[in-house]
Amino acid sequence: DFPRSRKSQSDSPPSSPSPTAKTFKHERLPRLDSGNANPTMGESFNDGASSRTSAYTRRENRLASLSSRTDDGDKDYKKLYENAVAENEKLKAKLREAKMELADIKSKLEKAAQKQDKTSDRSTVLETEKREKRALERKLSEMEEELKILTDLKSDNQRLKDENGALIRVISKLSK
Image 1 (cartoon, rainbow, N blue to C red):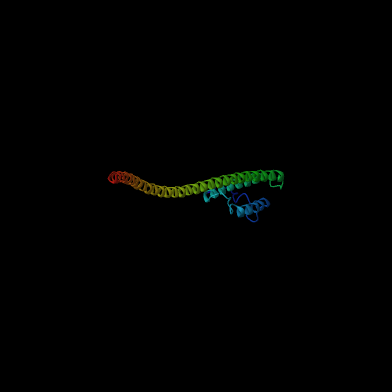
Image 2 (tube, rainbow, N blue to C red):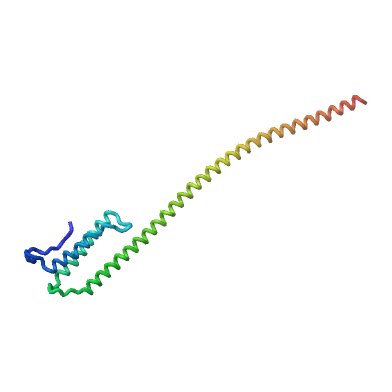
């Protein structure tokens, strides 16, 4: 799956590995062990596979550049250090971006949860308002009925007053 450049057996003696090969093996082991065993927060399984691929590619490029050097042990440690620092800075930048993205997603999630709370609160408020409206409508219809009864009673009362006045007149005419 991964493109790898290997030394052919004819490049190194079969009896003992060269000091350069020992160094490569030594450099390769910690990187393979630490690999992507602990993916970053926002990294999914597929992202881990792609980052492993790029890590393998970078590792192979480093190994190829080291093998192209002379075997007299003259290594440019300053350049290696600078490369490591540059790679660390890139990784730190990626980590900062991932943290910012995580914070953004958390805030969006919080806002969505608040919206959900507001909608559930609104629905609760609407239900109570509907109940109150029904209760008020019932009271209104009861009051309308009482008003009808009251007008009927007023008209009966006026009729009785009129009859009473007529009876009083009749009695007063009879008593004269």
